[in-house]
Image 1 (cartoon, rainbow, N blue to C red):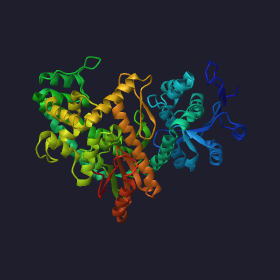
Image 2: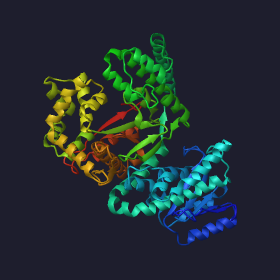
Image 3: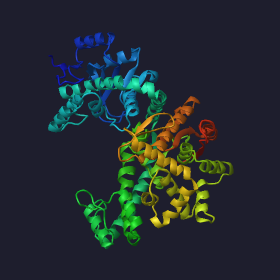
Image 4: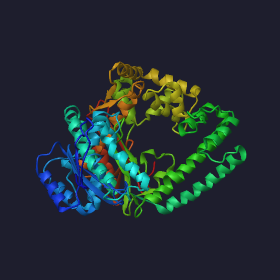
Length: 594
């Protein structure tokens, strides 16, 4: 066996005897070309390795191709041989997380592959089993052969021993190129295993997802500009607020760090709070637990609110604003969109930075992003899509009638319910409006009263009349949710079915999550389909980001009004479902706003 060829050992699995090749000579390149011109064992798959995860900036270090029995790794000097075959390949090409690899090849090697030829093993795996891990090697170890992880362990050990990272590990290190060469083999196995079932059972969902993946690549490639002076101002302002809060916490309660479980726990105990405990016995001080303390211990409200404020201020500076400055290249951030990143529901997620986690009530985070000169942002929000989907799934006639009434009159659905419950006029700035809105969402997702109270940020006593009033107003909705949960508990492998027919798996003992998954999974597919409608109408190149139930686009100033109007018409769907899916447009002239 030569130094540029390796065969995996026999362990009794599907990956026994896989040939891995390192292309670093003309003879090896000729061998690869003969392989590529012959009959492959399964679908052709491709992959890339880079110095990091920033497709536009981190050096492209390896391109890999393979089928179910052979993998080929090409270092930079020999990548042209792989790219030539890819550019002329007549059939389909599989990737695992296709948008990332497509962007690496396009940005750094000038190879633009046609999307109509691309398959994505990650999407196929999510549709086949949404509860299983969506990382390539662990998923292959689960679905194909446990030995799929062996190469990763060897490379991790070599990197640790020599203090290498993805940018410095040597090109010719056998553990590195073999790790890379195996990736397309694993993806080919996953495609061969899952695509026949996915095509047969979830073909429409797969076509939707792979088409949307193309839009994700385009949105990532365009990125969004940041406003550097604005960010620096708010870093200074927030730091000043944080300094004041920490001075008070330190002087009044002895808290040196709001991230210290011990220090914060002692202060909470001194204020009369009985802290919940971590497995190691320390006080729990995570975001959700602190919100629970705020509801349960009103007598400690000042301390808890200052602790939460200080933690939030640290996050604003360190997790967001400063990171925006560090990430930007020429004042543009090219975030990473994972089209099925929230795998349990099929929603997309965004990382680097995590834009779907931005708190809409902290304006300087979203506000850090500004349109390019001569442009504005135009956004469209799906109006109350979760409530609409709850009504559609449940068939609750009163709920559908109330939504239709609000559509016709312009009334707020949440104001309508708040006024019914409290039997008085309620304005949107009334705290009872916010409590009602938050409670309705919690109940819609199947939460019990105590969980709903914490989610809504109110006491159980405040929430109970809202909870009872909403459930009594729409009994079919409540009954349908209980029926869904009961059916899932009786199933051998519990799952729910989305409006588009895909299956979202439920963990045993957490069947109640099916109420949430059904709504969120269907909302995700509606959002993706609506983005494709925008693209088909010629507006896709303007899209920059989809988060939650919002499309954000970047539009030339002179076209803003027309695009906002046209986009609303394109997105609005009055015929597919028993209730219309409505969208509301907003033009953001200076920066991205709530």
